[in-house]
Length: 419
Image (cartoon, rainbow, N blue to C red; front, side, top):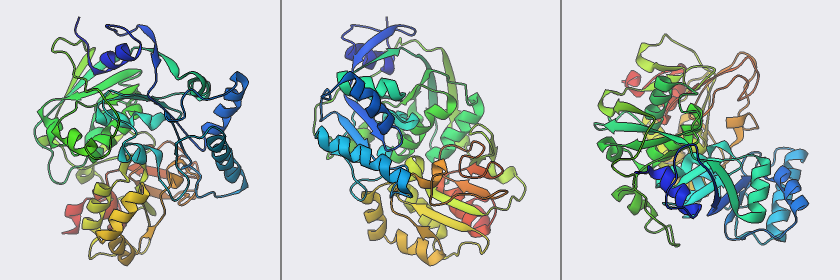
């Protein structure tokens, strides 16, 4: 029986020759991840089991949500992570100023790789499927058990094949691809399923596009998103990944519960209206919607390509007088590259605020909270009611090119509107 990529990875980590949808398997884990929000409650459960951790080299702890600490409570959360990392000598612990947003820095630093099985106490752990691995989010108790045993159980998900054809147009980003897909199938269209991306169109997607797309698999209800490993993947990991890894390919007769086809040539810039990522509309077809804030960054769109795209749009322009524009590089490395490339100067000259790496505004934590009635165009991944502040505020999801154009014009817009 043929297997898709996810089935092969789960079977291998369960010590089985094969696995199929619906099967329950217990797997050995390659990496276990947590942040300053999810780690502390897991530590309490872990201590009930008793230490030590299963492997201090296969755990990553990244304080990134409420950091730099915004208040006493958040400082306590970070201290709990710091103390645990010191107690158990966690190798992949990333203090403020030495890393960035978890889902940006783990690929960047070569901690995740093709064929790996990664779980994280954060729903956007599915990001790493961009590298051809299986990665998914878990809850507090599962994380605690994983810290102690290095194992987790899974129900093998059914798989949806997403066939991409054509070439991505110059004015389109991975965010447009994924928002289009979620708009097609809905926020529960891939509920507990794998989104396996395939087809010739994959080759026109940059690695940053793929990270964005895999990151938002959860916004369609997906268990994980996963891409095939190609030349671009290999180039990305060449100087990053130092440990052994396994490249997995779907069998020609692999089983899928559904197939969704997207011709990249047909895509146009889109935006997801409140209050769901699947409420997708074409920018060119919407009426004028005035905005109060723009956020460019997050684990979805805080990489160097996102900074470049936004800077190219904003160069020579000024942020609209009624708009606050906040730019947040996803990691210290991205920040440094953006400085060297002149992007930070462009943002500041345009009147934008540039922040140190943090999840901050994405989850309504700090660095950009919305008041009642305010609207924000954001490159983050969720626009649920109250996500970024007051329950009567609104968040519109978009790619960096749309966000930057919107900041300049003071309304939801696309770069061609500036011409």
